[in-house]
Image (cartoon, rainbow, N blue to C red; front, side):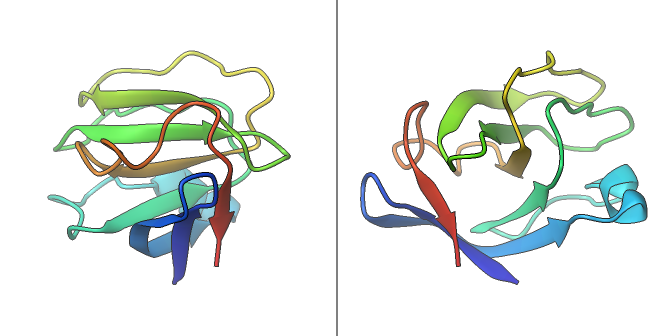
Length: 113
């Protein structure tokens, strides 16, 4: 597990971040889960687009580039929807809807500890 910190705002965004960095873990993502624990999320790397097919709950998604800068945030992405391909994104961070509100915006620099 890791912690997601917003370096720009000097605050903790998520206290528990799971890593999905193998083919199987990236393929599975959040599928089969009823929800995420409050304050937790999933980092998918490498990744520049996602889908929410067969998911059971909406999520917030942050797309991050090679310099750890958030280049796009999608709030409240619904089950059975797809994101656009986000050019320049190297990984995404998924969390419960509302987890990024007031804590993470486009342009912020993040760090995974």
